[in-house]
Amino acid sequence: MKDIKLVATDMDHTLLTESNELPPQLNECITELNKLGVTFAIASGRPLYTLKDVFSDYGENLTFICDNGALIFHKGKVLFESLFSFSELVSIVEFFGKKTDGIIILCGLETAYISAHNRKYKDFLHNYYSNIELTDNLGALNCSIDKVTIYFPNKNSKEVNDKLIIPYFDERYSITVSDTIWIDIMNKGVDKGNAMRLLGDHLSISKSEMMAFGDTYNDIELLKSVKFSYIVANASKDMEQYAKYRTKSNEEFGVIEVLMKLISEKRRNKNL
Image (cartoon, rainbow, N blue to C red; front, side, top):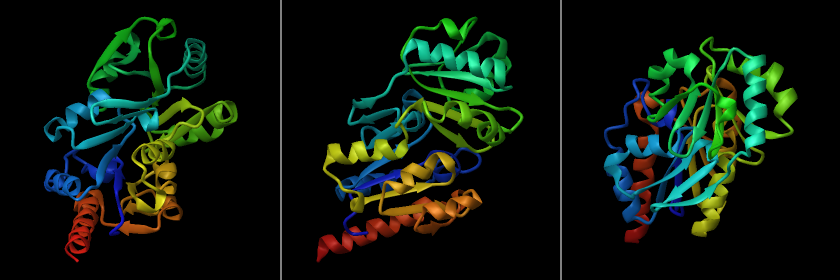
């Protein structure tokens, strides 16, 4: 652990508790890690503006891997972004509108867009997208979109993905499933793992100097991209194959426990 220079963690069901609360010792850990020369990143499917709201008290001590790797924000600057073309968006909106029962969310850099017909879901979605605009025609929007998310109120995201989405979209886009209610679609090659490698290249940090935490399918590439890969105790059962290490659940602040061990080891090594 003494050589770790970059740590990234997923948010939902990993860092956050089930009541969407941050661990009480997080600010202390991040401050100390920064002093010890460790960059701390939040790797989330959430957009930049929501992450900035959630971590408004943390200043510039955090790096954000947003929208499942479609945007990287470091020290007040966008290091990377991958945007859809207008024609691709039209195709995706038409497909999901006709073929699935999912709620389409177009993830812009400053706001998320949903159909006015789905306004009843706005309050729930506001937990993940702090800026939401209603529109009468999603297919007519011509703006900067880096991710398309489909919300499945019937909790059938994995079934829809396996039977319908992968056969049609897998060759064309990066697709991730999160929990039972989300499918995220990004440009091909975009995922949390690729973002981690890009961030590492920018900071001259190698895989052997990286640590990451996750719990479910959209964290697979993130965990593969680092040497020190952890899943929390509440992770999806089939995620064990993708992580070398285990820690306590999100409710037991498993991420914080490992971070405290990392800080202790870095301190010892510094004092040698």
